Length: 71
Image 1 (cartoon, one colour):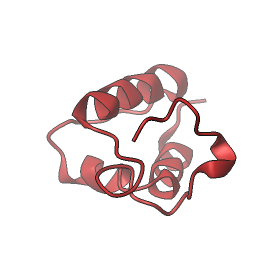
Image 2 (cartoon, rainbow, N blue to C red):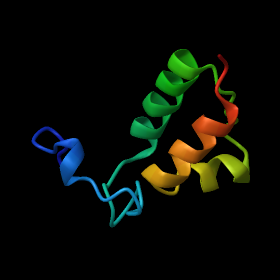
Image 3 (cartoon, rainbow, N blue to C red):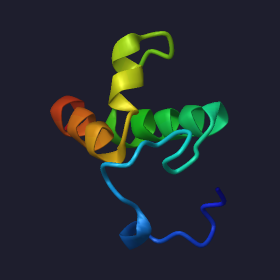
């Protein structure tokens, strides 16, 4: 899925980020993770099963960032 023409309003926050949802791939996940670390100071581990759960959907990722962001 190409996200070039997708607006935030088009995204279902509960839909999966990968596969049948937004269709992100591993490169997208890496870029998103790095952006979140830089912007919000959260710590992510690529090998962690917890990280996989946090990246399940926009909702789960937002909850993770809200709970772990550095002020």
